[in-house]
Length: 78
Image (cartoon, rainbow, N blue to C red; front, side, top):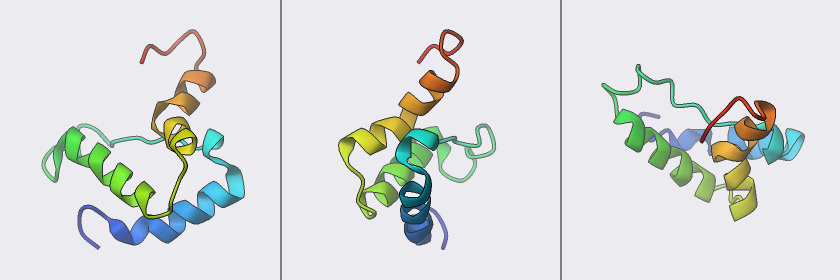
């Protein structure tokens, strides 16, 4: 499906179920995402798809930034 890619809901649910939210991180594909929807739109699309899984607030926190800060501890500034 076109943006906002709601057909990814089953895949996201399966990945979270299989690996856990603490092993998943969101990436925007910046700068290539800009012509289609922009960074803000891409982030909102993730939240929309995630709300359909559904994910807990803690799981969404891991996916949207906590995983990357743990992975690159001391090297990544949010």
